[in-house]
Length: 233
Length: 233
DNA sequence: GAATATTTATGAATTATTTCATGTTTTTTA
DNA sequence: TAAAAAACATGAAATAATTCATAAATATTC
Image (cartoon, rainbow over all chains, first blue to last red; front, side, top):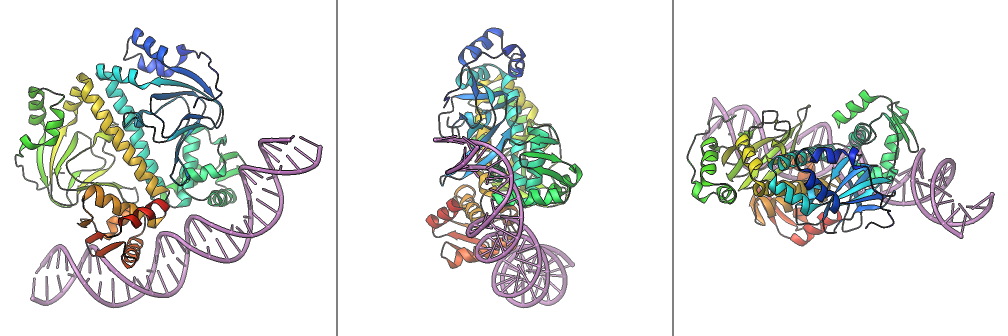
């Protein structure tokens, strides 16, 4: 799972996860967490976690972007979400039957800290403030997932692709202009439509002056129009 | 919100929620929870919680079935899920910005216990075991939501309706033969398609001997075939 | 740097889905 | 119980989406 990634000590003093968790746990507790976690670099296309394996760690992505990928029995890929950094992943699935229900795959070079679940659990058990915060965090993931669901399950392709573009721009790349780390095929796996439909729609949006689409380079030109398309489904 | 429902004391001694939570809290703590919670009956179509209102309570449904309904800006209804009983609802949204992001509406007469969130939060804060359990519970809701999402966003109508039928049979009615509390229109709001598409598909499934569909009475005849349709999307 | 593979793109044919028009049945209301 | 409303059902027309065929552009490999 860790393939060729090389171990390099990261600078924890600037880590936002450390900053967050140290509000709730002591220095010696953090030291334990630090000693038991793995700091790793992943190259593009490497698996950070693999669907079906034992969920022994949470992943804190400090740098880079990744996709959450679910592979069906028939081998079809479904992208559940794309995440930027920094972000904590795994909270939602980890306390289940202990198996990762999807894969996390780097879509560009990433720096990741794998945090031992059992250690974290032992802190949660002792620390009400921390567990409330994690419940809050998980609630928010859940809420995002519901809105993602509403977008994909109850809109048609124009609206879904508008939503994907808005999401990428606002959340993943945080700019109206970005260079995609995803192929058209992957965008289709995210938007829940065919590859050609993504291409057709991009071409149409481009012609209508809503976006500028040149290969991997995307720019959102008419944000208002995109919002309208999203709203109308 | 509580409309005409009349207050009737339920028999807490047989309540599974009491049984669950008393593993983690003391008798006097339960007494506080009991004193601050409201025991209510809701008739079919009554709102148990309303989207947009302050999320002050969790709902424990001890009897009856309900739908989680999201209403869009344009007035379109989307059914996020249907729940049977007993079931605890609200955990996923409650710790957010304190607003219910969807409505809970009774689809048949229900008995519901509304549990004060702030009291429960104070228990979570003090009680690691309880918060771990709630995290686990929320994780499971999250996982279910992901699979629901996969079904609806990445399958076509045949597969989606097969999934809805399987879900209703297995989880909501717990029998291959059941009498629907939902109209065709509501089924469409759940499956993410048009009302006519539900009717057409039911007719087709009936002709193919997969289900028996007579108005509100549904029977799953060929479970294997339904699974296959679900799998192939 | 040429050859090969992959990705992107386009348009047409096929299939899926929605919408519309209409009628029947069931449920609700007075 | 009759009248009105809502739900269910059917088929046809219109629209949306997928699949297929083909080609150009871009990346990758040797």
